[in-house]
Amino acid sequence: MSQTDAAASAPVEPARCTDTLTASIIDDVGRVSNRGQDGIGRQFAELIIVCGRETREMDLREGEGGQTEANGDAPSEHDSGSKPYRFYVLILLAITYTLNTADRSILNIVLPPIKAEFALADWQLGVLAGPLFAIIYAICSIPFASLSDRTNRKRLIAVTMMVFSTATAACGMAASYLHLMVARFVTGAAESATVPAATSMIADLYGSGRRVWAIAIFSAGGSVGATVAGLVGGLVAHHYGWRYAFLAMGLPGLALGMLLLLSVKEPARVISDQASVTRPPLPVSVVIGRVFSQPSFRWLCIGNLLLFFHNSGAKSFESLFLVKAHGLNLAQIGSVGTALGMIGLLVTLGVGRLSDALSARNVRWLMYVPLIVALAGVATALVMLLASNRWVALVVGGSGALFVLAYAAPLYAAVQALVPGSMRARAMAFLLLLTNLIGVGLGPPLTGALSDLLSTQLGSIDGLRWALIVILAPNFVAAFAFWRASRTLSADIARSGELAQR
Figure 1: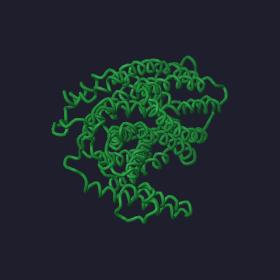
Figure 2 (figure 1 turned 30 degrees about the horizontal axis):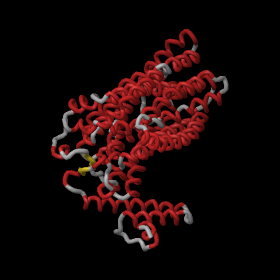
Figure 3 (figure 1 turned 90 degrees about the horizontal axis):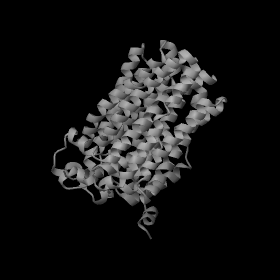
Figure 4 (figure 1 turned 180 degrees about the horizontal axis):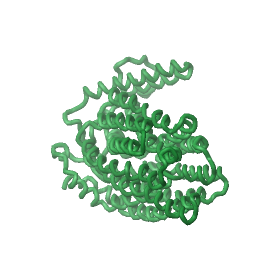
């Protein structure tokens, strides 16, 4: 009889570990199906208690320095906790990313009523959705990433989440365009800590054989976040006003932040060489030079920022286009967006699983997936912008969003593989710095300015339509950049350990 079978048939003792814990949770899940909502609540509470117990056990096991050597970059279960505990942490991080994405995206859904209330031009909406958020996000991502590489990542994620959740709720109380700008400024600063710290934690919880899948689950939180933003932003704003949408979206993050602080343990850092244990952290300038010495990293950064240039510009104005061109209301847009977002969740998970399988045979697939997404985005966007039927425009255009976050898992996994463990958070921050400063920072305002310019000649609807068509051009350059990155990816990954030894 296997250990798992024996554990499943034996009574569960409170202090037992791994296999017994797995059997206990499986038994609990089985009992949930026979209970009502109160039973489900009790079972969820018991799971949190179990994970809290696992956290205390990890505290007792933790060695000095909070780091562990690993061969092949694979964290041991002893250091990272049991499989159920690691999955619990992964789900909490994915939910954190859900709120991060939802708090960021909800503005795009409610831009039409904000434009009407404050009498704003399209370029002002572009500034609010783009550079105001992106510039501070980019500036703060580097110092937060440096903290992530040196200090407690779990605590950093929890505290910054409570800050950006509070700032999102404050958007609902804005009395002017200036007040809204200040609240979005704080939101962008606090949200910049989540992805570098979370992906660094995931890389320490899961080895290279399961890392793309784990990051896909984390990235799926972004798809869920876009769905939640569409649902809350569309339905709540339609029935109660845009201010209540911000309030409803901001408050849950406060509770999740406390749950992270109380039930999650900072994982031991996996390192690839013993010298990294005793060597002091490298200065940011040195890390920048070493990370960007990898040709594939340079090219994937170019591809990602160009892809985000289009995505951020398009997503900022698609709702406004559908309202103007097809007379749809926010509730209709939100309802369809919710359904497509749930499909997007499955797409993201499926792409993660497929990328794991394909990259095991040929690591270039970590770049081929973003390449395919860049080209598919052009096709779906053209259908949305040129279709005469409102539902074809909404459904096909919305389906393009299914792929927007799907490519993040292989892309982020490639970044984690290209650098040693002591540089992972900062490498992610450099990627996000360029993506937000250039891609998100320039996409929405340039799209808005181009729309205002073309509207004087073509009218409001066609001016916005052709502005959204023009910004599709960078997707072709992005596809080329991902192809170039794929050519050197395998060699760059092979020499990643050398970056920490120079």
